[in-house]
Length: 474
Image 1: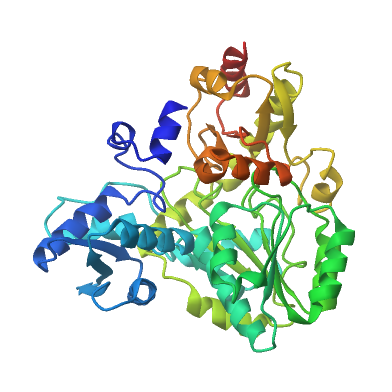
Image 2: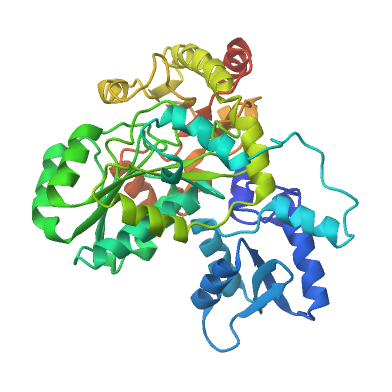
């Protein structure tokens, strides 16, 4: 826990050891190396250079930073970016923007560029799909969403870019109809919350509904703001409480009031739930479960072809998405074929780990897809028996640090990998909230214990995962 706090507080004693990390939060070493080469070549001394996923993204970042001398567009061959004077404030704004909407240069693109420039001898060898990678990925995705055609399955460089593109497309379309209000249903992943807060037209156009099960409150809200309602974003299930709303009722309410519904099943995988018929757009992080080696990011925006704005959204979202680097596609196309096998092993492990945790005296509460509060809602959406994903969240009756420091499991903030991962999720996602009285009160009001642990079960033998948990709980 000392290291968790040190990372969040940017303690050099901790951060100096982070050579690589989740690439929307820590710039990849290849991207840093390439940025240094370009900065030297273009005489950008005393400048900070951010490399972006496209020229369009560089334009958006430059516009965000704005002001005379605040930002300079950089184009070097096929690589694009933005340079600005060294400034803690400008750097924080740039990094947060690229993190929120998924605009960083791909590490594989940076690696290939370093090879072309003679800075690396060769790219790291890895297995990839040799033919049409995008077609292979869509072939597998159609198993999860058979109603969707290839044109409805839009690939993104990460899940957040898919969510942002869907939000942007719907927001622009609905704004022309006088609809600008967006509803966040339940506690969502931090960057999804950031998109809704930062990119709605006014602060008053962002509405947070805490209780995903309070249908009466939702009906009253919709009746009040119905003509101004643009869209609703919901995770199915939510992260980190793993709550599943009544999706059929939510979809009917959205249709009644002209709102567009965006559903995100990243917590359990798009392969486990049948959501497309209920949503206008299903967004998903393909980083999870389909990229189970944990070595790439990717995302999906799937259009419901029967939705009222399907054709318009298909075109607008496709235009808003960032390009996916071909070698990332080739790597994902190779991995996605293993998804069924990976999910089967995770699904076998999950209930065994849950059964262990729920009887431990030191464990206060355990959340998972079949928690009694939303078990029936979840089962009504599953595509096959036992398809529960791999996420468990739980709180303790004992001090967090004592347990976490003793626990001998891999620790990290992602999930949906072959490797089991655990983290004190709210510390990593919302450190500003867990470290203040007001912030902790906000979490409690949303039903979230600030010291909540998020465990993402992998493919290791269940008895090994359980033994590690038992040792730390003893």
